[in-house]
Length: 551
Image 1 (cartoon, one colour):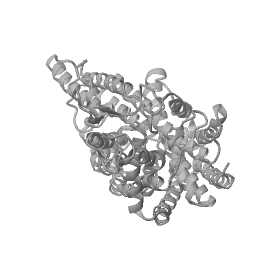
Image 2: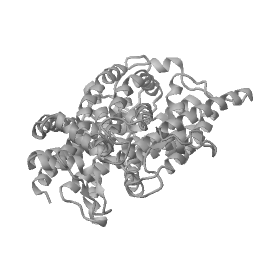
Image 3: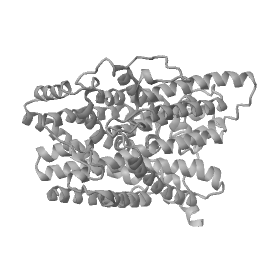
Image 4: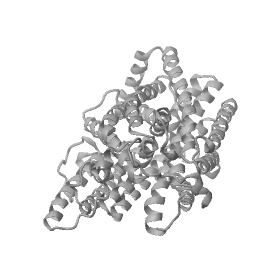
């Protein structure tokens, strides 16, 4: 048990949790019993708050634990996260402006709300909502896995149910302040999280190379390790078989990033298009810090770090690589601060993700199919309950999916959420695709994606299923036919399934148009996609104090 580190961690964790409860009164509107206030912060966040909110949402335990662990175990392939984070922002710059405008004019809280209005299709909106819920759970699970790795490094590594008890306590605290404060809690905590992360990372990337003989020595140590391993995919540079995987994974991840409901929540919570413009220009600066964090995976190799064995599974936990690096190389106080930064860096996005998923459930399933006459108060109450259930689902993902690297939890979610791209992203610019064609494309694309994930083995655990997101072309089936037989080139299966989805949607649209099948009403107008916060006749989305008192 690392008692000094645990004390520092606990003090910072409790202080940040208290901040989460205090956030209920921060820039509060007339009531929190309304999804506009609880789930989107009243759509009043300015540039700085949005910067920290989106940054805290996108740069998560995936960044601070999972990606460095991937570099430690697999080498250069882990660097895919850097180009993906760079190209994502130019790709989404204009689409997000259109999504904010049409959502603000029509009161949409979720991507599924937009699809419902664009195509007048409750079924298509339901599919988008379910996809968002399912894809978010493994992403939340990744955050919990990162937090658990920190707790395990501090000595809380018991077997069985007792080993998960500290995580359960953190889970309950997260659920409590999310329930009370809504989106304001992670928005406020994100300030503290980013400050801690910047301090820890900048100290680490300056001090550790000096201690270990410089970056040349670090890369030499990593090269020596990968040269001695049997896998051809390992190395400090890409091999012939994983270059295609690298490209498709980077592009596919960039396309998927803002399709996640939690990423969209951060955008919709901003107060205007100018806020989004400034953030899409400035947020790539996070990628500089991301690159430094990723290099810590190679630093851990040079420092001869060994992962802690998980007492529950009996296998080494690669998520403990970076926590162990800090524990081995720094004093207890700074190590405790680093552990707190990682732990808080996991809880902030977990809170945003659970809120976004709760919005999806409440608006697009509960109100659409279970209680059409639900009041704003009932919607808010349902969302708070749903955010708790989603966290439970994330815990189940940890138990049921045991991938080779924890980053695969996020990549599996990316494979799933990519199937909403035609219905959400393309629909921001054109309604040419038929609504029933989009349903058909989603069904076939999703079925193919899940099948490809199912046949990917996990060499670390011996499981034959859900071992990751990359598949050799040799094993890629097309109606039982293997067109790339003999090829060992790896490819990101989400990219393949998306291509199938788009092709099916286009072909089905042509067939349905020829058959004159009704396309449904478009409830948006061209002007909706260009509205800004100072536009005339914007609706009042949150009830006034008088209306709340009258209720």
